[in-house]
Length: 77
Figure (cartoon, rainbow, N blue to C red):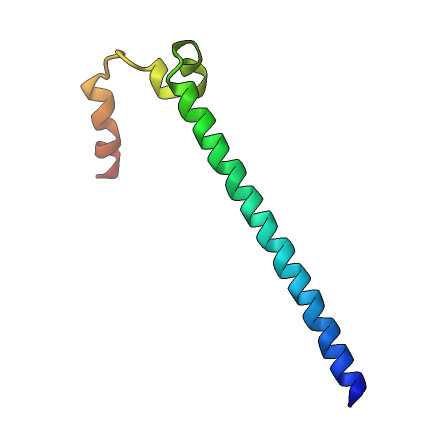
């Protein structure tokens, strides 16, 4: 009976360590993602970097032909 308690206690300690380690990993990952988001948002405000960060910015002012826009709808018919 005493052996079963030791084994259960050992398993619980292992699960607790894995839980704590996983929590730290998730917290660090979330912190890294928030920092990356802030950096990319700041880069969008710098005109010289805006073209590298956003491919849509390169298309600013380029006219879209109506025929090309309607092509995708005609293919669905």
